[in-house]
Length: 465
Image 1 (tube, rainbow, N blue to C red):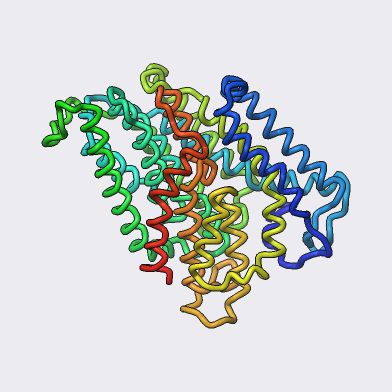
Image 2 (cartoon, one colour):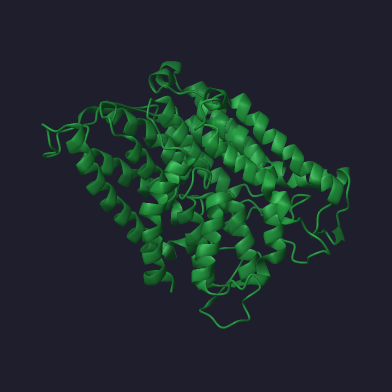
């Protein structure tokens, strides 16, 4: 465990942050939502330096709070006290322990997938879009939601370049490819990967295939109906007919598929807390991140520059995520600390409550640390009646139905907002740079409330109970 990793602590101290200190996190979310809408701040907010200024400033306010108060949970058998040592512990935990692995994985997948160029004429229309969404949703569990999103968002945008109504297609792409599709394996989505690191067997999430297939198929069906209508409005004299043959399709930069697979392999095996493939060698700290960055650099070296230019590749989207999420990871330590203390007392005992509580918070906090908080809470309930108990390889046990509900909530409801999962913001940024007018923060939530929440209610009744 990294110094300052406070997520596994169970003993509460005599104090923890007041609700008032959630304000920096709330203000950061409001800034993300409101600044793009205001005439006076719209162009200012487009600059990544502006995002970094706001995120960094609110992060400093949070660090100042911990400097003055200390950390309210026992850490390595002692309580952290006010002062610089607590600030150091928080930075080690939030930046080195969470942010660096998060942004390193996103960056490597972003760069490598940006070197794959799909050429040819994809016929515009609902069938092409549904096909791309289906392929992306299937790939997401095997190359990660970030890898699948970065691989297919540009071909999707090119296929719809001549259409007026494209925003709904990108929104459903975020729903399916950037979130729901990644449920089946730990490499699919960051919260499941953290579960694997904490002892959930690697193939256990395959047990959730029914929930995955149902939600995946229902979203595709809803999108098909929506896009058929939108296509008829866009092209009133050319309603969608039989699928036209795809012309001269080719894929350039194929070496990057091998590099994507290498990133996935490195992410799943180079865990500093475990022996590497049973060899007795334990990877050193940040070995995984160094390998990821090295593979990204190798992609830049091996991929012809003209290929990336043809792909309109740039670093704007990943820089936007990096600037915003540094503040998010620091500011969210306050609500996470409160959850660590209050979680066992929230009377969240049924699978349905785990699903909705974990999912609701995964919509606003990053879904990976939220998953960990509720996993730790569920581990304290193994003495209560329930379904079969799963023994975790790292120690501890959890009811299978609780773990399933937490996994579904974190992965599925990470799609509810732009900040629920890392790829969401990246896809939004790439689409906007391609000229698509994407919905605002709250406008996107209108989509998720109208489309996703009814589906999640059905999932609750059919699979969770």
